[in-house]
Image 1 (spheres, chains in turn red, yellow):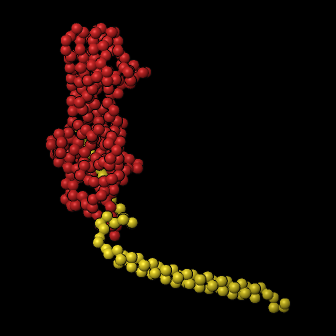
Image 2 (cartoon, rainbow over the protein chains, first blue to last red):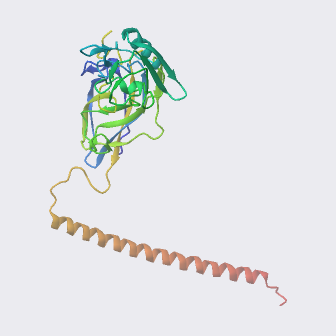
Image 3 (cartoon, rainbow over the protein chains, first blue to last red):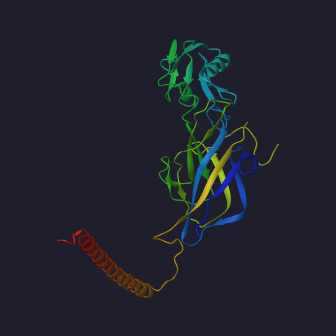
Length: 242
Length: 79
């Protein structure tokens, strides 16, 4: 007789925490799910409800520093932008408030670029400043004579456009990631299509069907990551904490 | 606000061609079993074929009889 499917409803706050971020946890099963010898277990994501509560700019993402050298200075100064979810105007306002030689800034929605006005001789070390990607600059050191405009468009997502739902303790050979061209533990790719501080629900019409190479499941270790594999910091709780 | 929730489905897919757990079946025995079942299939098809042929003949004979009956009933006794 054919088995009926098993559905797992997984709440982050119920998981046993496996990382500092509340995006990686373990759900033990009271009863092991086992396939018979002529069956294969298949996993798919039916829905994922999540808040856009993670920061686009943070120390954990290593994208919140800007290094510059003031005119006539003999050393560089490092600006660390506090963790947060910034829009471009808010980011420029913060930078302007902490860099005395950055005298003005503009942002064009038409070109999606910024123009920085700085005291002549100010050097922006975008060659070693990861925040440059958000401001739309290439990885080059620029010494300003009067103004400096983005090389390319502003990208406040820092190229983080999707969440990847992974099940790290299950083995499968169904999905290959472009970052390393090998089989991976990704079960679903969830677009980040919601504004900051809002909640959304993703329900794929044609979910990926991940055939497992193992015949039983006794627990599920689930992780939400960005494309590069960084765990998403939802800035909340995990593991039954209040 | 920072909590998330996922719903996963775990289903069972029947393997038709390649069982995951292969048993240590003697290849010679496997070959004999395949030949045996092929022979059984062949005989079964043969029987089925005869039965179908018999049914066709029966229907045709029945049809001829009905046509003959209708023809007789339409004929006038005076002719």
